[in-house]
Image (cartoon, rainbow, N blue to C red; front, side):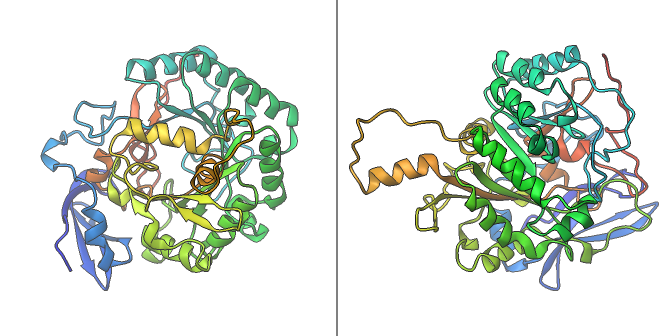
Amino acid sequence: MKDFPAATQSVCPECLERIAAQRVVRGGAIYLEKTCPGHGDFSTVIWRDAETFAAWSHSSATASLHTMPEACPFVCGQCSAHGQQPCCVLLEVTQRCNLACSFCFAAAGGSTEPDPGLNTIEGWYFRLLEAGGPFNVQLSGGEPCLRDDLPEIVAMGRSMGFPFIQLNTNGLRIACDSAYLERLAESGLSTVYLQFDATDDTVYEQLRGAKLFDLKRQAIEQCARLKIGVVLVATIVPGINAYELGSIIKFALQYSPAVRGVHFQPVSYFGRYARAPENADRITLPEVMQAIAAQTAGLVNSEVLRPAASEHALCSFHGNFVYMPDGSLHPLAGNSPATCCTCGSSAKARDFVARAWSYPRPAQATAGLSLGGWDDFLERARTHLFTISGMAFQDAWTLDLERLHRCHIFVMSPEGNLVPFCAYNLTSRNGRSLYRGSRKEAQ
């Protein structure tokens, strides 16, 4: 096996102090190992396929530890030493939620915190423009659809020049309130980023506390009716829904071109834990890719799923396809660096995502003529592009500052600072947060 970058920096899961870490090979897998002077040793699996790790991790440039300020990740802002510009920025427009999920980045559901006012959100949009935007925006929470004025928030962003605004939602309200979804469509909503963990209600009962599959389907059908693009987003938990990856992809294709792709998120651990998560509680990116190939029975070959270049290679995989009339998925140009988030800059990545995840617009009139062959394929590629991707978000056990340095997904803090997603959501084992706990909303 070839050498691979081993030394990095991380934090202690107990006290969140910055400490040295090493990526080491053991038993055919890669582990992130570190020692805190006060809390001992930690060893967490990050990649269960040592044979592919070296080539995959070398596929994009790595950050120099010498370029990272000593204060990283404690005073993110975004700082001038950060290695990437934003691709997508999350605006958390509420901390309220109508579910009580087992796994939640925001630990939402029981919050009594008031929603940020429209003046505050307008200030966030201005802050993004000052920081070099417009960037892609995701309206998140909590559950954003608990706000009756969400269409006004979308319209505000579009009027200020933000071309791509997506909604991160569990889908419950848009499934049942067609008038509300129509208002969102009229306001300029680009895409619905829909929580979708399975086609099996037993999974939803375990992860989300209720049988939700029919509501998820109804939300997709409502979006299709209004020509709003949908991306299905699945949190993958070993022993609960890791067998569902193929079923999710096949279900998504039934609703192409409205459903633009599937995004898999291996579970990461935030909040308060009586015991630290064990390695058996984790599923790594190569396992997700292998499961996709096995569970789709040849529809998707794991070889066409590739690492990113605009972010750290260990953070994600992406594959871009054309869904053909015969039901096959045709990979696009080997998923070369011109495709989704494999392009070298965040600007190119956000442009591709905006095109790929939005509902296809009508083509220019061509007097009904077709040249056939390549001409027909190009039209099919325009209308039935389908993406399959995955992202391994980092928690206190897996945080790698080399990866964080390349992050291009940011959260707007209540104070107007751009904080890398994994830093913003980071918590110690007992639930102490670096960022999420200290909110200073201005109404």
